[in-house]
Image (cartoon, rainbow, N blue to C red; front, side, top):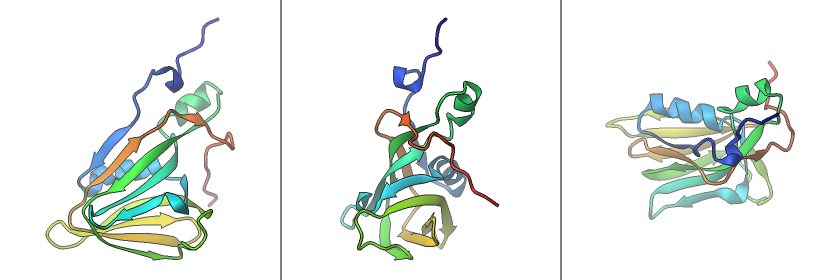
Length: 159
């Protein structure tokens, strides 16, 4: 009996996506939904005008295959980077505890004037990180091989 190839075997390429408009951002938002990350993995480089997070992303793109093959779900470490950031604000985000782990629920763009606007990262527990951007440019890049999701389950959102 032979087994099908898996991501770990190099059958799929890591994700490398860029969003330059709100429609593109919806794709990235769907892929990073339910990603988790510790507070220490958020960085804002004001000189480079870049805000980045090293996420442990649930592999939504692989979930149907995992379920069909009755194998475990996977996560992968990914960098979510927002470019051209002029200002960062947060609400309900406790930055004093470096071990605090956040769960990313959604990413949205609220347009302003002349291509500028605000990228909002909504976190579980009513936290929000708002990034004032000169122009929308969001990058998502997988940086490790996938690994078994510790819970073994797909994230759920009870109604």
